[in-house]
Length: 397
Image (tube, rainbow, N blue to C red; front, top):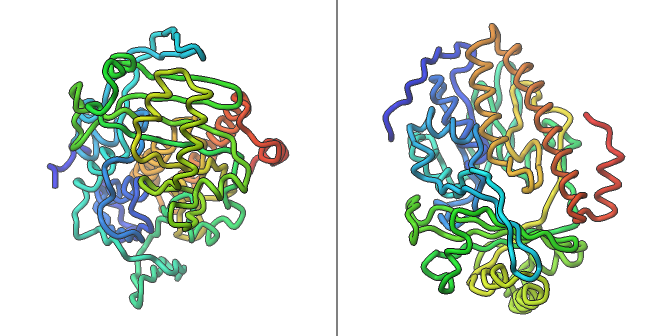
């Protein structure tokens, strides 16, 4: 446990206990913030074990940086990698640059900072929640044969949420018609000279209905010194429903649905990815793909809800709005969900007023990000005709 933050907080009398369904970033942001308010928080995570630190990169946005600094006592600059320019490649491998200072972080660095801040006794992995049922003045969270009575339940079990429909039956995400292939490479394993090509750069290549981007993220244990970082890349590729099923079916024939974890890509799918890279990508980006041992993939989804609370059950993070990665806002949105709830609970006179203000704020932000992501996909030519038509025809909740 780190030292407590310097926030001046007022305990929330209406909420003494909270249960968080899902222990990834969305759930951890909420758990850490509620614990800071003096709430007795318990987190239940379906998966067992601590995730590998070799996950995807994330653009460090203001709410995440503020949360890490204020609630976790972590200097975000120490666990992120700076970039000074954006680099745009043409098909022949030439590039031009524009000034754009940003910082890049890894999913694992954020996760570790949040887990280290939360008392380990509050976090229970390998324990799926089977039901979240309301009762007068609170919620019952069912885990195995046990029923845990809490004053507030936070549903934070991600884009494939099993409990979203309890609050918002209209919110199931829809496939947008393309996938993101991803890869992470230790800097020491890059071909000679390639590190210098991407140093201090957030690099992009926009092709015909495709986009590729890459940047450095921290290495093991948040290491950020040159030579100890990792190159992180993302490649957006169109795929119909049958293509998605093929991409996310692993080497043993097991279908994974909407994502494929590292190390499981089928040989034929991997060979086709390499062929596509040799045909379509500028040489520096092709080399990244060729030198990635374990590429992984995820379906790009659109999901939004018309409400984020029902009685004392709240949706947060990707269990509420699933926004496209082009927005660089998934972690930022989850952190802002937690910060806004923390602030509302402290400043407003009643629990009902706090939850109403929180929902109003987060619905507005979620809808804006949803529309922004769909618009970016359209400008890149990535939207499938069905996803574009469906998004255009929806009324704003």
